[in-house]
Image 1 (cartoon, rainbow, N blue to C red):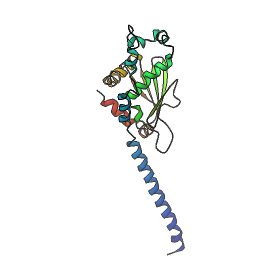
Image 2 (cartoon, rainbow, N blue to C red):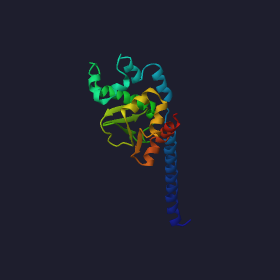
Image 3 (cartoon, one colour):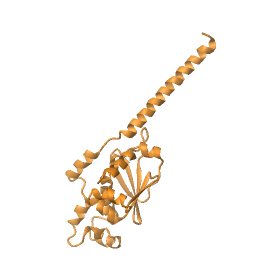
Image 4 (cartoon, rainbow, N blue to C red):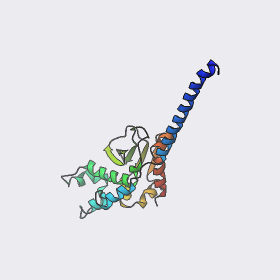
Length: 206
């Protein structure tokens, strides 16, 4: 074997090893993207045990003569929440956003594999904005705009009320155009964060 051939052999082996490693990482990336953890059973148990409470039911029992749909009328919202000394308008709004996020199964979104880049959803409700982040099955709701949203959900308070009250109204709201989804991130990011399953769930609700 010539000297040149001997020199080429290690380089070829290194190249082959690098290709194998990259193919393994790519396969692992795709597998993790397609097989995100499913927290549905965990959240169903939390709802059954009363750890997560439907705000529609919670506040319907709190008011004797005011219907929950009137509570979500933003013209009267500040005055109505003023009846409670221990809860603010923002806290009540967050409860509805959080419960709607649970119903949309946003908890099954995941961080991009091998990174700490979380899913971010901006929820625009009439003239108010909220950001939702998901990390390891936990949903975090904050008031204001999301820094780098993957998608933007636009809806109204009446629709949020319906989503919280009846799961079947979620898909109806989007198919009827009363709520809409605007895609911001590219397909690669959406795929890696598990939005494929989110769209399947959304389409499968009826």
